[in-house]
Each structure stands twice: as structure tokens, then as C-alpha cells.
Image (cartoon, rainbow, N blue to C red; front, side, top):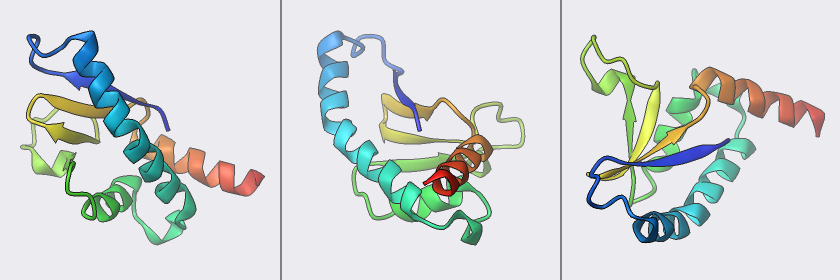
Length: 108
């Protein structure tokens, strides 16, 4: 699962800030992706439900889902809010992630 950091406050968006955030979030995101991969996704309606369950264990991040917004929301299915100026977005939507994880499990 590929992810990227988006900084909404342009005054904070410096290479040093990005490096600090990536160095802190890298191990957490690797752990999160490993936890997702070890679960049986047939028990979950979608990947974002599994993300929600796992992220509730993490005090540093908050999962934002499409259902958290109004009906006119036009953003991704879900993303992770690190702080009020920094969000983590995944390159694939939840269905693509689920398919990728299931295929990887079948190929092992």
C-alpha cells in the first residue's frame, strides 16, 4: 500500500518538516500496513473498516472516512489525519487495496 503526506499549511511545508513527519510516520505506517495484511479481509465489509479498527489503537492518528463528511464530499474514501495540518493519503481506494491484499495472500 503506497501512501503520501499532504501538508495543508504552506508555511509548514518544508523539506525538514516533511522529513521529520516521514521519519516518525514511516514505522507506524509500515506497522499499520503489516497489520492490515495479516487480517482476513473476508470478515470486513471494506478496508476502511479494518483501518478504523486498527487506528483506534493508535493515539497519534485519526481516520477520516467519507461518512464523516456531508453528502457532497468529493474526496477519497478515507485518509488518515496526523495533525490539523498534515494528512496521509493512500494512492489506491479501499476496493483496490482490498483486492491487492487478497491477491498477495493467494500468491504466498
